[in-house]
Length: 232
Length: 171
Image (tube, rainbow over all chains, first blue to last red; front, top):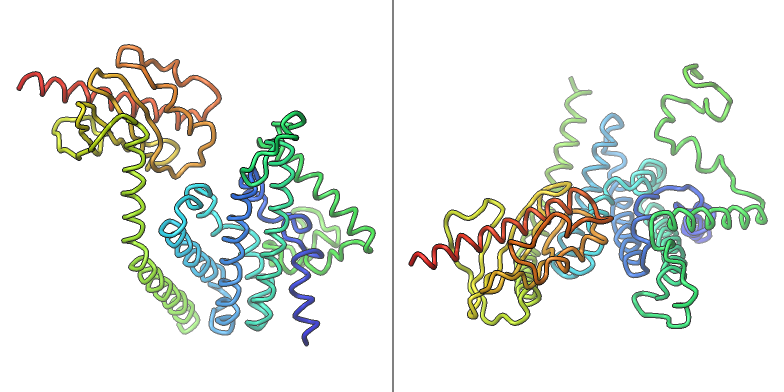
């Protein structure tokens, strides 16, 4: 029982890391990893929303009708994001200004809606909370890793603190959009390499059932059914 | 009928609960947000007019529509707050103009856009007057609509300054 909870928690950090394995939440990942502070703030904000939405969606899983489940999830997630926005604007205005439009965009973050659809609607509250914590930590770790590389090697600083030694070796493009894509690509490659050593990622464990097109595709993409053909 | 009614009812109840939760959070945070906003404006006033003392908000008729607030400084300068539309509405810019019509500073107060190099646009206008402010000042690798909106806000501030000084001269 205890091991099961721990496995759910750890799954999101390494085995099913939302950013580096599932490649979800790419937009905020690229946008907020220019510096460590904004990456950390985004990671914490998304984690809080993920835990709360997972808990509520799991709690209401028997009440929410299947036909309107996506609108219900969006309303719940948007509610938490708006509340978080108001709290940040009141208590941490500098963080609110730093995250800008990406704070509101948490509503449409694929990780949050994906976990609601894939996990929270089928599992009890505690498991869903553990999943939220694990996925949130996985998202946070990936953001911090990427932001550290981009800020240290691109801007010769860490969390705004200058690193004089790095001034002579910095690569400014890393702080810009192309640098973000480069670092993202290298980190995904590194994660794939590490996973290969551990026996590879079990694609089945997270592929079909969490896919938004699952109801139309019925696993066609995995069975080699071409576009336009039916797998039903 | 039941198949249609239940989903509608469930979604409606969820919406209602979320609205109530947001209303509660808003009640808690609204005064704090208002206070933080006022502090931000005061800080911005001092930044766009560093030598200014004692800013007082005044009401002036007939100013350009972009100008939302006007602050008069004891030394004869003015600070104008403008609301313009960049990629989306809600781009709030503040601009200080001293008694000789020279821009002392300009900066963003609020934006719903993700700003990067655009944050430094205000510095390009420092020391300029209505005669020397040209679109070339903002040329460069900044977001086009945001930059255009910034320029129009500065133009509105200069126009408002001229209207106010003309009124003062007429008196």
